[in-house]
Length: 75
Image (cartoon, rainbow, N blue to C red; front, top):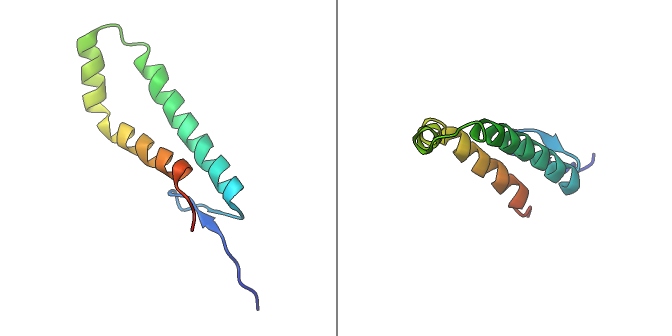
């Protein structure tokens, strides 16, 4: 019998070590951040920008949770 320790990211994926988990979390964060940013740069008017943010608050909350995965210390 042996003890197995894994690191779980917020998406439920298990990783063999902290470095792998952090890399996975960073990739998810970067992908989501890039996706949102690319949609935002296409907006030219202030009112449209505000509307976009209000309509996509859940995505910004999700981005914050992904960032927390990267910053969180395991222990």
